[in-house]
Structure formats: C-alpha cells, structure tokens
Image 1 (spheres, helix red, strand yellow):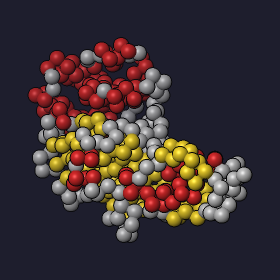
Image 2 (tube, one colour):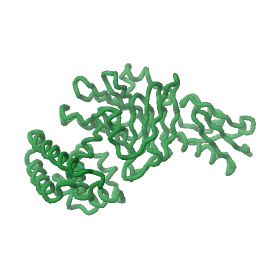
Image 3 (cartoon, helix red, strand yellow):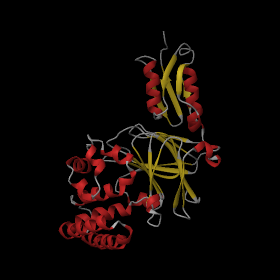
Image 4 (cartoon, helix red, strand yellow):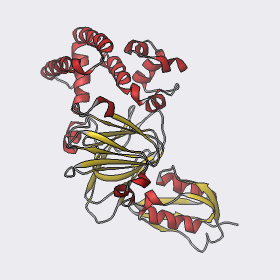
Length: 364
C-alpha cells in the first residue's frame, strides 16, 4: 500500500481498486481516510478523483430536469473559471475527463457536483441547514452556561451560550455531519470508516476521533479552531484564499484563526504562547484526565468541573474505590462507561441534560 505515497496524478488514484472501493462503498480496510488526513497536501487531487467516481453514480430522482440542466451549466462554468488556478498538466487531464463525463453522464455529474457546491462550508449556518438533504435536529443554547449534548455515535458536545448545533438523530452514510453556529467543544467517538465533519460558516473541520473547540459566531471577525487531542484537518471553501492556506493539519496544543476580512489562515503552533486564546481556555481544555490511583469520587468531581454538569453518585459506597486510567481522548459517555466498568457489573450511568446519575454498589 506504500505505492500510494508516490501517486502524482488523478489517474493514479482512479486506477487503484482499493481507492475506488473506499469512495463507492465507504469501506476502508486500507485506511484511506487516515492516509488522507496524514497527507493534507494531496487532499485536492484526492477530492477530484473521488468526485469523478461519485459523479458516475445514479443521481437523485428528486432532482428535476430543469435543475439538472442549470447545475450542468453552473458546473461547466466553474470548471472553465478554475483553469488559471490549477497546475497545467493535472488541469488538462481533469478538464478533458470532465468534458467526457459531462457529455456521457451529464445529469449525474451535474447533480453530484452541484450538490457539493450547495453545501460547501462557505455558506451561512442557515443556508447549510436549508440545503442539507438529511433531516436534522437543532439544539439552541439560550442559557448562560454550557449545554451538554450527546450524539447518536457516542460523541459529546459542550455547546456554549448563544450557540446552535444541528445534527441527525442517527448518523448514516460515509460521514458524520453536524452544523455549528457559535462555539462548541467536541469530543468525537473514534470511527475511521466514518469521519466526523463540523460545518461552521466559512470553515470545515474534519476528524476521525479527537477533541477540539470551534468558535464561529456569525457576527465576529475571526473563526477559531483549537485542538486538545488527536488530529484535525481544517479547510476553507473560499476560492479567494491562497491555495497553500486552504487546508491545515492541526495537532494537540495547536490551533488556527481564520480572518474573514483577509480570507486567510493564521496557524498557531503553540497555544501556550498565544495569550489571546490560552487565557480563555475552558475548564475542559485545562483539566487533566490522567488518573493514577485516584478516588473515583475525585474523578467525578473533575468531570463536574470540566463539563459543568452535576453528577449524582453514592459517595459513601464509593469511598474505597480508586482508579488508574487515561480518559483524555474519550467522549464523556465513554469516560463514564470506563469508570462504571471499574465499579463492577452492576454499575451504570444515565445522562439527562446536564445531570448525570451513577448507580453502583461500591468496591470490596
């Protein structure tokens, strides 16, 4: 599989059967998703190859002929306009392939690319929600404290005041998509075969499993993404931004600030040196979840401080319970599951809003 490191053209990717299987079926035994995240400089050519395969699939029957024709015209215009922004050899192949597909698969290709253009992260939160084909639930935080949201895949979200989050009741398909207006801290359940995407106005944040914060208020000049654990791939849909800045791979203790005025990224390699951000880190970003022979009651207190939740647990029964574990890279439901598993087979938990109930008989 190391041969893909030498791929230089769209043809190389299209000729790879494992790449085709990943794109068309969503199955990823060869870890294409992880490879793409680790090679952000290849993302543009990978996306072009991916779109070509997907373009040849059956279109949505709900799309009318008039819409298809309009999409076809719009797509070809965008292809022509993009000519000066793409490296010549690759572009000549792409334009020729696009012409063949537009003529041979016309409606299908137009529908697919048009669909992606409609939902690009450059549009506003409202437009994104209106144009998504999947039904979503919306949670709005009108309180003065963070709101805890648990998603269907086990991921957890701390939604800040004056913020909105839209998400499906159940994640289906090849990707897990959520839409944010405002600020939220995400802890994503790991699933390499189903990456997690956060659309927040101008920015798209793509991960497999990690924890990070996105701040994207519609009325503020900048958008911020700050990484606590794992890897995050951040991109902008703005065609005006310099191509070398359109995608960034962020590691723990790194972040990025996107200027809406300049349409440019400012990468932050060390958050501790960025006072404007480090001084505003929340409890969940500051507290350690590394525990060595620590009373379970104290671990629950740490979780309460981090998530600003209330945990009801039998403190007297658990006074002799100690735990050594690492919970840094786990969503809240998984943290609670690991703790309860250490308390015996009868231990359990339940989350209702910002209140958590733990039942356990105690330790020997």
